[in-house]
Image (cartoon, rainbow, N blue to C red; front, side):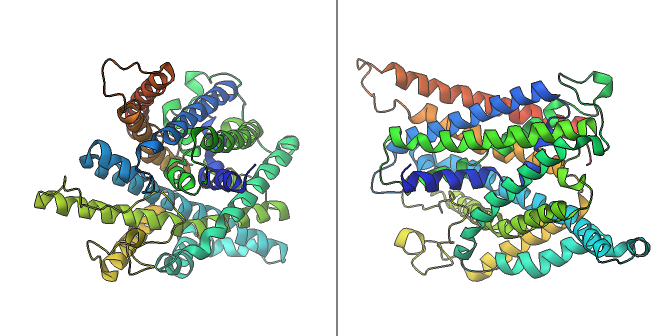
Length: 459
């Protein structure tokens, strides 16, 4: 495998296999084992279709420019740029909240485990419940670890987080398999191989379907991966998403299937909270804690850029210059990239900064993201519910709706002559984009409605 292809696969795998892996076993709960595996497979295929459409439509971007959702939006309708920016903002903001919720879930357990092994009286600590209060640790980690990283001008030093992420997920996979093999020693509920009976379900399958969608979402990094490839032919590019989604699917089968079969209907949104305190479990919790602390700035960064783009869009719209070809929007395809407006006076791709965003504006937006993320994280305890909402909105837009729309609008657009024969393969890809777009809209409406009106577990 060429180095560029291997690097691209690891980048997509890191993007997909984040903290969402902790909730994959919970996503099986309203489905049962076999329907859950079928749903996991189908969502993986749909996500792969979205990525393959991206590898196909990259040819429509001028060769002198890097591909991005922003560039493609300019080709079909500049007015749609705000939809993409809003989707990125929602997804990244929601993922950041989920990271803080994980901090609140894991740190009290880590502290309890460490103090217990040191012989301290944890029963006495229970009397001072504030010491094990999740809000305390969310506050401390946000203030002293996450905030300083988010306000940094460059995030290049955090690019090594991808290796930490892969190691953490691999360790989590091994931990789940180990406990699955020793599940007789754990308290567990009924395992359903088919759909649970209606009277045994606490919520609809539609409320956890977005978690499966969220688990495969890496489409916002796909264009950056393609831009780095020496050979941009479809034959080479298609290998990257196929390998990345296949590896993610393999991990999710193990983590989701084994995790659900270990705890059955007693499974909760963060599986690590269910395991008894031990050295191996504490190491797993520490690994995931390190992962989310380093990954939060990588979510804050594109969220901030997308908010800047929304502000630019609104200002441009008010001035009536939305369709001006000189209007520039910041590309938002690489979560680990350095902010082009903060790390260099040159601005975007060596060009001058057309809007003159001040450092003050950047700091204000960053501060607002941190404050609202913190307030929501200390108020919400359900990791699964946050991921369900993010999956139904941001992830569905990025994975299905936008790639499908771009595919349908752009693929085959070079055949302008009506008498010119359009190849069958082009027609298939074009209408695959339309089907993916329709599927994404249906998933968004149904899942978001179910999550809001039918509710989901608070765990």
